[in-house]
Length: 362
Image (cartoon, rainbow, N blue to C red):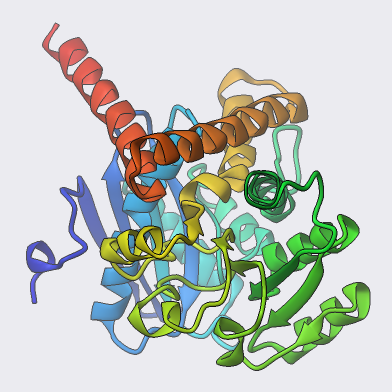
């Protein structure tokens, strides 16, 4: 299969592969769109079984970033990077410096941040050799770990769902099944617990499970069991594509609202959830808090100012309003929520591309 034959290729502007023999770095960067500004997206380090699997992931994730940045009304395009390797055993400062040097070759078309398998410390190593990274923890413009802001956006979205579906002002009396209690998932669990939710959690990391369960009183189940538990809301917060023909037949929930990217294995799963009356919260809408945090760092760097938490809060509040607008439109038009979200994002990207083309022609 060639790149252009991939079902996940979506008119990407550029796909770049990097290899460094000394550090063992194997990375792919996909730039989906720069219509709204430089492409921005996280760097995922994962032990992919094959290079083809890594390519599919980076193509899907980069398109998702274009939509995420557009729906959050940020002046940024969409991109993503993946590093093939075991994040527990194959990381090194030199590997991330090599990654940073490769980013320089893209000339600012793509800015990388942390993601699954990487940390702000890893990004800081890359920053030693490149300006094209975001999500730093040091310096006046530094935004730090975006996970808490991502979790806050997902939490607020759960409150929207609780109000619309269950008539509640908080999460009291509701059960949320959380798949994945890493950085974002753990923060989300703490917020849901504080708001009165009963939690059922799973993760492959036993230490994370134990820590979250002790803090929140959550019930722990195996990874396979999470789909079939009795709950009101399913919150996928691990890797993508967990909503597929096998898993949706097991679900016993009224809504899905989680932090994972690319939750729908294929778009028709969103259609099927709509047909079954399960409210799907489009992932790239509700998990947009982190990229808003990163965008504030880019603004600060470009303007020579300090990081502005108030700007982040304004953008996050507007994003939650957009989420509510999507739910209202989906109900009024009797369409799946993901279709409404995609239409809004595509309209914004198209308008920016046309404006950019007119300016260049001009």
